[in-house]
Amino acid sequence: MSSCLDTCQDSDKSRIRWYLYINAPPGGRARGVVHRLVCSVQSKSFTYLSISTTVHVVVGITGASGLRYGVRLLECLRCERTVIMSADAARLVVGETGLSKEDIESKATSRLDNDDMRAPLASGSAAFDAMVVVPCSMSTLSKVACGIGDNLITRAASVALKERRRLVLVPRETPLSAIHLENMWRLSSAGAVVMPACPAFYPSPESVDDMVDFVVGRVLDQLGLEHSLYRRWSGDYPTRSQV
Image (cartoon, rainbow, N blue to C red; front, top):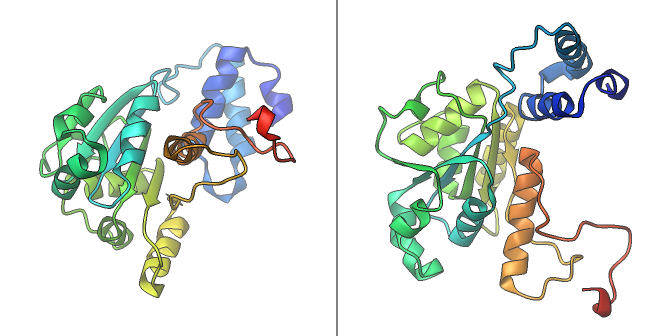
């Protein structure tokens, strides 16, 4: 795969890597897809219809504790981003963040109502690249696992699964019941990334914001987007003077 990409310009490499990251083909066929894309680039027939230079990420915020993760993700995304907030999230947001629903929606490039089932995102023809539900309530997670699309967040998540787009679910719940774990297994088997909000301590966080940034940074990693929100593991813990 690397040898194929080496023959391309840097701008083409980034587009190909983004396409493969978000649209990872099942069954280990990545090498063949790379070969076809590279050949298209080299023959000047590459149109970039699927490999868009503008990334569109949908952010769903549901009524679980941990709304700061969703707010911080919106702040850190440097791309087109659509936010959908559930009614429960809107009720919790002031107590957890001190912000209003309108404050949070202003951090996105566009917003949609969760009960708007006529919105473009309810269709598989909608052009978005990835979706993150953060925080993801267990009710929302269970609905997506069972194929229930009774609101725009769960419907858009179902669209992401069926269209083989990147779907990242960030639950914030503990402990987990056998039902929770089974639903997570079903989603992972269907292609979703289930990423519980579990901050690490090897970056030596000094504040709650540092711990929030770690989780958000890991979400951005799953989207293939660059960031500098936390210190990556390098094989050893830093001394206090290095932190």
